[in-house]
Length: 391
Ligand SMILES: *Cc1c(COP(=O)(O)O)cnc(C)c1O
Image (cartoon, rainbow, N blue to C red; front, side, top):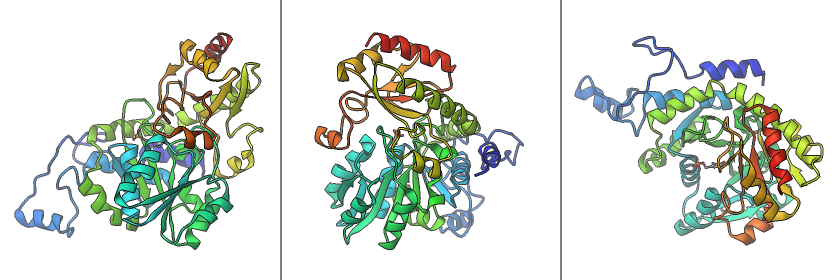
């Protein structure tokens, strides 16, 4: 996509001046309910015969602006904002799968998603098979007659393994299966799964979209028909986002392209620097020529992103020393924001994933995940350098 056009959408899509006051910034409509002009109007709104707001769990003007913004950035018909990324993922999955249906999902899932798919939904009769979705033959083979959902994270967290979205969408379509992609890692600035044939995109807007580590929220993006079919689940299970979080995210999105451009630029340089460092065993970053799917990365992404993982020579102990000695980089989970963060997936983000599944997926005990922020790159490298010297 033309990045100039993307930049304009990031600043303006959904974010129209307030019609009643002319306010440039979308107001925070902190109102749980909305007054009807008369009983007939209230009835017409509930019947869906007239558009307009009723009650904020069902729709709110600030939240609506965010939904329009995210839909425009993903190149989708529409979107729904939710209280968290996990609310988005579980709502989408529960709208697609009913009792006795089956989910086919990547084997290196986000920890919360792993829990919902392999444990919680099992209690409601939904089966799940985890498979390496970068292996197309394995995906084909794992499809069952009752498979309703193929769920992918590309690049995967934290191994940065890519899934060929076009190929997966083609396989899914041939079997009448809905494809859902978690696009949290890349953000729509770097990757738009719908352009590759994926049906539904889910986001943790907690990460790059809000971008300032001050929001927990999510989004479900897709066709109007899909979202309409999902609405009873979304509205009645109560996954709705609040207007203040929506506003913070709208504010963050205005600089998404600027932040992601800088973060990606710095990440590329840091990944190369780490790869050449004598204390580093390996680095996984799609922008490195050593990444086995570098060519696919160039084909389906507009940039290589701000995320990488690496292993310090000396395994768990050495990795722990690096994490305990960084001064500028924050030792915290979450990612994609302006602050550089470092974390240990095996004991943190993926602690809920059984060790057996984790090791099978390649998430070794010594793996460190790194999210590059917008600080001065020389300062980030200097911080890593002094921490690696102590490992
Ligand atoms: C953080 C994250 C989630 C969960 O989002 P929450 O906002 O914490 O609920 C899901 N998927 C990925 C890839 C994430 O990074």
